[in-house]
Amino acid sequence: MPVYLAKRLLAAIPILFLVAVFIFSLAHLTPGDPAVLLAGDNATPAQVEAIRARLRLDEPLHIQFALWLADAVRLDLGTSIYSNQPVTRLIGQRVEPTFVLAAVTLCLTVAIAVPLGVIAAWRANSLLDRAIMGLAVIGFSVPVFVIGYMLIYVFAVQLRWFPVQGYKPLSDGVLTTLHSVALPSFALALVFAALIARVTRAAMLDALNQNHIRTARAKGLGTVRILIVHALKNVGVPVITVIGIGLATLIGGVVVTESVFNIPGIGRLTVDAITRRDYPVLQGVILFFSATLILVNILVDLSYAWFDPRVKG
Image (cartoon, rainbow, N blue to C red):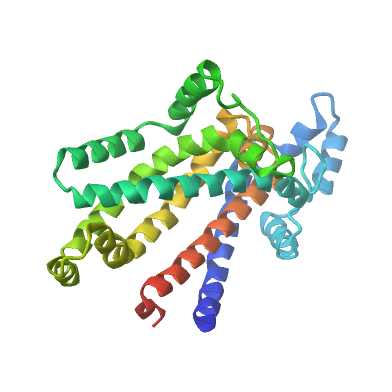
């Protein structure tokens, strides 16, 4: 396993480099000059040039990239043009809400989707199966911000069970934090669970047609034991695959959800950076998201090895 992990980490380096090239190019193709924006409407050309020199924007693009990459390797992602604070500090201040939201969403998703997928497969082609798959289609088709506003209206405005917006940090208590992220997590989980429930159903149907499952049924084993002990492990690889792929969708949903529920996470930081043309922050948060996704994919690959040791070869 350590050798397999080392290979996956080495393979991630060129991917991360290509991502860095793409992020840097994309940020600098965005219209607008941050030096002009930062200087203000009444700035003189000399003041604008001074800001451009301070931000190293007067260097050729490849030099700017080399300097930025060298700093990034040392975990120095630059300084925010807007707030004049280190980008790493800004990201560090916003990590907790985003990670808590993503973790709670993932737990809710698995808790909702896997049992529904298993039940749908066990009752394949029944009314219950069609109802579950119909709900999955609806959940996957409705945009997350629509679900978010519906949940706010019902559970926050009408029933007053949850706060309308905002985030309570973990330092206020775990239950307080979970209460503050319940609605946004549920909104994201409904979308994410729809996809995983369908994949779980398909994988479970395939597993239930295997010979060892027929043998277990012939021996008279109970339904719960057949589903959980003998069939469920066979759906691990496809379900984990779609969870890994879906995390990209989840991160995109986090950006929208944090705006809808006014959660001060990295998604909100990204939106603010785009609005203010704050290139260092924008590059930093996208690089952070990309590195997180690459790390998640490595963890997914390692979990493959646990479910099926043949993949290590």
